[in-house]
Length: 237
Image (cartoon, rainbow, N blue to C red):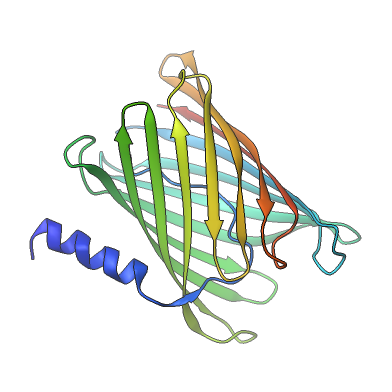
């Protein structure tokens, strides 16, 4: 099988008519790149607030450490905690990720990658395994990043099933320290869109701080009205 046919097959699988993923799918949008010797400490926060009391408001925190295994593979592990009103903070899940950079930057019209994720929710012992096709396209000052995910959930308290989700970001290359963007998330119980701002601060000695902040507006009844998103990545070698 040629590389182009392999990519086409993955794309067909990712876009096949599966059930859309349930639960809130707002999170990180992944780029396909891996830097040799790179290490990373990451913190992500999502604050959700809704006028409908049927939807819980609160914080979701994610703390991770990752490092490159080679110039094409990157592995990262996360601890995920939630802080909901009336219940306090507790660790909800653990997650392990492996990213595979498929093409060199600029080699094709799109830069391609694959992301493999395995997550375990502690309280209900639900396992979730997913594969995400990453496609990044640049033209002039614009960068479009697409994440197409196929997900399998299994556990004693849910129906075992395949699902699908999509997330995308359109970013304007302004300056390295400030780039405006707009993001979109779509799954069974999530439909949200909103403005973001991203930037990169170089700290010297190969150290960098990547930041991202913005708000996504829920556009269906199952998504919280406002979703504030913060992501910080400290990269070093």
